Length: 183
Image (cartoon, rainbow, N blue to C red):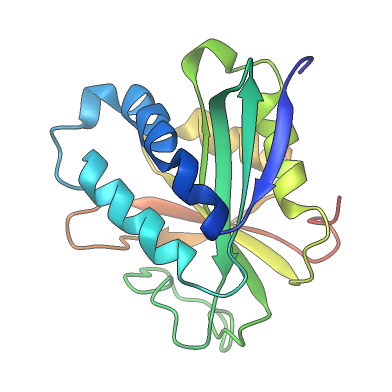
């Protein structure tokens, strides 16, 4: 997408734009903010958890100095709860983490006016560029098949079903294999 400025940030670098990121979230989830799980407060809490994990990274997309989209995630640690609530049988070791095996893409958000213009792909590729993990995982709400199809067109494969928190909706876990994540 022409004119999109991408900026990589670490946990400390998010502090000065955190409210702007929350504003983008509130715009995208405006029709669901009354749900506890999708409230701005709960999102901010999850964002905070991510910033405390080793390997955290974010990429923010700007138009005219205003954040219009972003993605962030972290490296899953041995003690991760990422796979808690997993409902699908998987081969032994498939959800075992080493602290270097899997990058968890926690969020990828694009303001409505920019959807369908390639911004999501640019931000996604910038976030994964140079990552050393052998795979990337993300969760997509089961009720969003178009979003899942988009990720699958980028090389992600269905891995299973998960309800990550007691009040969360059903998600599909997707995996992008080693080599595919390199930019």
